[in-house]
Amino acid sequence: MDSVSALNVFVQAADTLSFTAAGRQLGISSSAVGKAIARLEHRLGVRLFHRSTRAVSLTPEGRLFLERCRRILGEIEAAELELSQSREDPRGVLRVSLPLVGMLLMPTLSAFMQKWPSITLDLDFTDRLTDVIEEGFDAVIRTGEVSDSRLMTRKLGEFRYRLVGAPAYFAEHATPQAPSDLAAHRCLRHRYPSTGKLEDWPLRDAAGSDMSSIPATAVSTVIEPLIEMAKSGLGIACLPDFAVRTAIAEGAVVTVLDKFVDHGGTFRILWPTSRHISPKLRLFVDFVAENLFAEGSR
Image 1 (tube, helix red, strand yellow):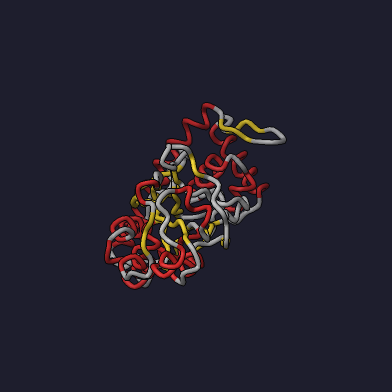
Image 2 (spheres, helix red, strand yellow):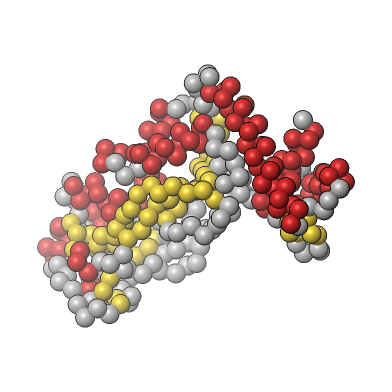
């Protein structure tokens, strides 16, 4: 088991390229990581890492050994999981990072918790760029494309933006017929908390030019208040369709300028490539993929 522990230390260090980050993941000091790597190198008779005062990197021998170690650790974990699966009761903690719009995903997450009560969800809501491996998350849900080769990914669904306002608001202020009309309207804007910048509304005017200068009557770093303000007749908000589907169906808000909206997005769930996917994580990935964009989940 000492050998298995050493392999695990090596894989964590190779994934993070940081003895400090690896130690944080494993709950040990960076010096303990360094000593474990040194003992492993001595036993193997090869150098696994290039070390400098600023960074570490894998040697060619280290890269070759890493692939072997991943397979070995994967087989060990798979054997353990096969035994635990026989209980048919996956349990434990799942650390999941979600965007700040994640509160709108809570119906799906609540349904998962009701179905699998032995799995504890540890949820972190943030829009900052998260290092899944270094920060120890089992999975993250984000929008956009994936550029980290260390991560596996599964598409959860697509969404589009909608401009919405209450019928009473448009009865008083008239309905905009073109994006340029928004200059005379009360617009409810979202501000990115990580950068402080206002989110652009993905609109084009009739001539095809970008429409990025939209007035701001109210600003929020989360979108739930924008939904409520729009429903209360305080102005027009630009929101993802899944966030306002219920309000539209109930007639609390109506959409405008649909033909001028030219952007959407994709929700994805990501998890570390090097980690054998556990039953609890597999259940979570499958459940969210099947239910997040299902009509009955909201």
